[in-house]
Length: 251
Image (cartoon, rainbow, N blue to C red; front, side, top):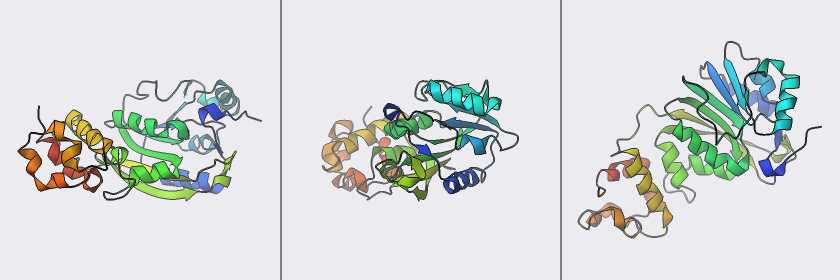
């Protein structure tokens, strides 16, 4: 029996139908290199190693789970990075796909790591706490639309795929789960640059109950702030609105 380590947010996926569904979705888009994040006991890995003609690498922090994977899947020898996903360098020099039943305590940070690697990530399929998945996929105007929604949707198309019951895991988490898919946008909204765009989005949502005019006053001159769009609150702006506004920010 594998030890479940709560400190690492471990909840092992055991439902074969869910595993098969995730694998089928993964195969919908072609790829040659695949990074599995947090394989744990190898429930999903068992399906991934059967996919022909791909280079599979796993990143797993827990030494016990690494030993288990090597004993059960000797083909993974030399293809497991024993480290924290948030601390490793980009695992491939060429474009790759990323998949995982993500530890819920760092799942949002994993998404931001994907954003750092966005020029190389062809697809990301991840299991998240349902509320986090909803936040990433939320449209403008939604109560859960926020920084993560805007920054992810600026660069990726987000598909909220399906929900997963607590009983699909061992031990069952106290929250519901959901699987989402990120695929690169064909056309990224024009923005002054990423640094300005990110600063604008974070500043706007830092005081989301205020009008945009009051929340981001420090970033624009007074004349620009007279525009009608600044009467809105951050959650009412689309990704494209934020991108367009970045051109009007002060230096």
